[in-house]
Amino acid sequence: MNYRLYKPEDFEAVYGIEEVCFQPPLTFGRRYMRWLVQAQNAATWVAEDNGSLTGFAIIEWTQAISEITAYIQTIEVLPDFHRRGAGRELLRHMEGSAHDVGASSIWLHVDVENAAAIRLYETHAFVRSGSEENYYAPGRGAHLYRKPLLNSTSG
Image (cartoon, rainbow, N blue to C red):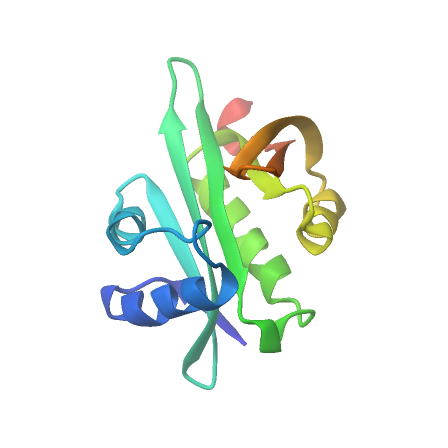
């Protein structure tokens, strides 16, 4: 498996993975997805196997007055590639991108019913910091997870 940053020619394959991994109303719209992958304050990592994309992840960051925080928009891996370490590697690359821009923490929403994703985040030192009812859709809540990052710029 190879991991690299997104290139514009990856868009159709990335969006195809989105359509496999999520069903409406949980899918990102094409326009929003294109905006996310092109944003200057974001990084999109892709996983590929023998030249075909098998997963991707998007992280974006925001600058507040005193700090930068990073938000994991999504981690998606095709079902045939689950439990092979792609999600873990994509998460590691996103944490690296957050560290590179000087983020002090990284946070995310995760579906309360997505036990595999919750396990992934908890295994990587993310701590549950709250919940939001009906985040994904009526009756589909989310847990919020956060992880502080150690940055070379923080002394």
